Length: 139
Image (tube, rainbow, N blue to C red):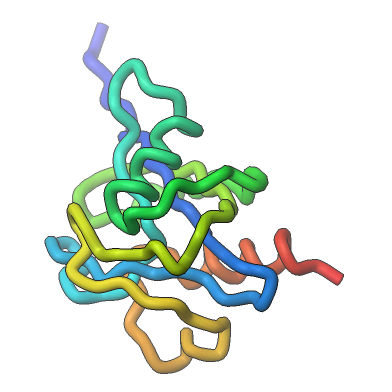
């Protein structure tokens, strides 16, 4: 019987406010070094995805978040050049005034959806952000 490979589990977090502003971090490391991305990262063994989302948000943005809702699961095998990853994405709320780039982030900023036209986004985060807007701000 052959050995099979499993995809890595990750999480991404859409931290937003009532004015439709949201936080992105600038990646400090490859892949996509110096590209903007949603805060997030790998789920540790023995950790729930929800706990990983809260931990990653704190590690990269210095914000203690409260998860709002599950946005979706993103599993395209080519979404990450390091290998097959599956990301579980949540929307979240937190005090955006406490934001400070930390851990794998070299910068952090607040954006609007219109800003996406002017920046380079990592991975499939443009699709994820659009899905977040459709889910969180639907009319």
